[in-house]
Amino acid sequence: MKLNARFCTVLLLCSSGFGAVLRKREAQFTNGQPIDANGKGGPILGGTDHQVDLSNPDNLGQQSTDSGTVPNLKWRFSDSKTKIFYGGWVREQVVQDLPQSHDISAAQQHLKRGAIRELHWHRVAEWGFVYQGRVLVSAVDENGKFQLDILEYGDIWYFPKGQAHTIQGLDEENEYLLVFDDGDFDAVGTTFNLDDWVAHTPKSVLAKNFRLPESVFNSVPSSNPYIQNSTVSTRNVTGPNGQLVGNNSYVYHTFSHPSEEVPGSGGLFYKIDSTNFPVSKTIAATFVVLEPKGLRELHWHPTAEEWLYFHEGEARATVFIGTGNSRTFDFSAGDTAVFPDNSGHYIENTSLTRNLTWIEIYKSDRVADISLTQWLALTPADIVAAILKIPVDIAVGLKKEKQVLIKGD
Image (cartoon, rainbow, N blue to C red; front, side, top):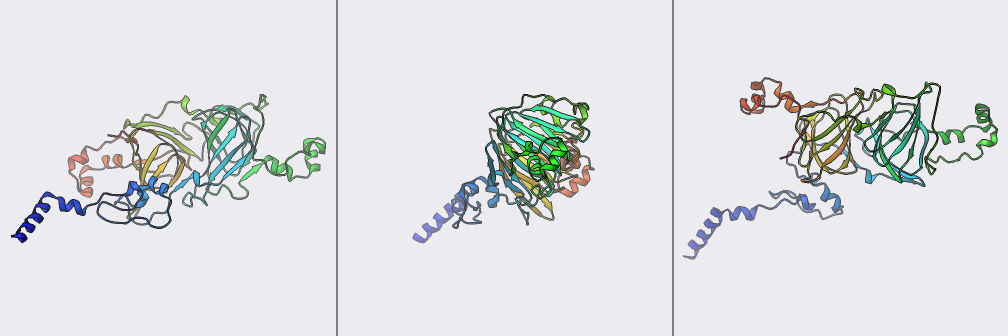
């Protein structure tokens, strides 16, 4: 009788599903542990940074579709070495930090009011985006034309390779993103600073060149200041060859132009490349704001690697590099990333309440992407249905326009 009672109890547990509940666990990825709901994985018992684990649940194996070996494609500016000066600071992300970023390196730079990023030029092109405060940019090209302009939030500059320029902070605190079209920006022979050059030129030659007494150059800093305190410039500039304006301008005031008309209704999309900023021939960019739960649709870029800077919000992206290899990454403000040339991917806003803001950069003269949905919609529906094993009427109904930014549910 007792045996029968136990047997009945077992039957009751199984029929109620309680036994399955006992076997099934809750996934622990959001608690910073690599444990899934089916019992795979286990707790981290050795050394770890729990806060990093908490903010990167997909790095713990959360996505069962991740497969193969995909190298690290993410770098946090917070992990960069910060160089501090009396007038501000700078921290970089170069190829030594993110080896997969072959085309692009970048920096965050901060200037106090009046502080100057000293006069300099580069062997590579420089692209800048102001995200806090206001700055004065000054530049001169090989024909003696000059640029003098005030930039504020959202404004962009592009200095072609070899063009002389400088930047000064105008508000109490000012900050911007710098991008360069070379991953190895710290290599010797990439940046040339005025003080550094003058300090390493004989004074007799300086005197002869400028037609000035040698004593004028006695106070030139022996060590390169890079960023130095000063007062806000009050002087105007004039020159016989005029200013860099129109298609020759080094400056683009982003929000003076309308955003791109993109389907999907999920946010704002600004494209800044040689089609609307003609001087920017080696760096193409987009400025994107994606609404909560929204999706930057599945796509790839046929012309270049995609380098990204996440400015606000939280994101997730899965990158597919072919032959069964894919990996999902989590992003937050201050993160950079690079998606390999032609790799398939999406970007998802994982916040339920906050917008996601980021910048996409390409070493190219134009922004170009191929939409997965549009490709399938413009392929014979029966072929698509046969490949994906889906009903043909589903394939027929796919949208023929790029959706770009898809509104969240």
